[in-house]
Image (cartoon, rainbow, N blue to C red):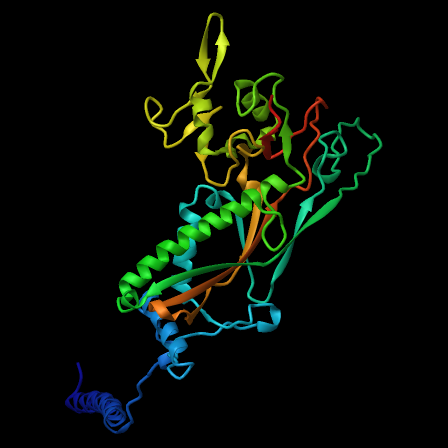
Length: 397
């Protein structure tokens, strides 16, 4: 039991502790109130140039206003391209806002039957070209695969044979694809309609031109296309099959000339005018026959018709019936394409000023070519070659 004297001493200690804590809380609260009442209010205000455009149409209208006023009306959100010393077009213009540029290009790369299937490599803002290591592989014989890698069986303690792989490089340098479109003054007043119209038209036109370069490009100021590639294999037509025809034996030989390990990647690119040849194509079996071509829909329910189980895609870039390239067997993953940064836009009111129209120019920089520098001689059998790209010879009699 505590004595009265001890109780008084304990109460005094407890009260001192309580007073100390209360004093501390009061001081902390008072300090916060002083800071809150007497410190200047700090607000973070973004520069007008940091605010994004709400739509592509809004940005295009700002570009038009800049052109009309000869630069006097300059929206701070417009960004001029950098790195002119690296070869970016010197005729001026503005970079399309990143999210709009991405959307435009995504439409091209996502919806295209051809462009969506190639291997795409973005390159850095400080570069205009790239060299991609590639294997110098033209023969599947021992000691030649993968550029010269040699694997072999050996007895315990046997002598090891060295291998000396050879490597090649694919050099790609950016080319300019320029799109030009005209807008009426009425369309320019509706930024929503302007953005929607240009977005769709731009994607469709660039899809067409990029796909055409992938198939037909000669490599001069544009990508190198499949039909001009040194790795292209051309299958001879059948004797007496007739001009402007495609027969089952052509399809079989083309399929046999693919690089087999990648069979799941192949598609057939055709000109639409060869479809009647496909619908009537059959292999003779006894006194009857079996179809070679499986049309789209129907029993299969597939989006595309098929040959040997692979999609048949009609495209405008394929040659007309009877010409080499009217039917192409392609593994498009073996076509590499590079591009850089966003899309550049510029405007001119001087082109068609008499008809109240404004011209918009878009510039997209890219390049591409097949990854293979030549076709392959197969491991077994030397009477035919193999390639990711195969066509039928145009000489048919």
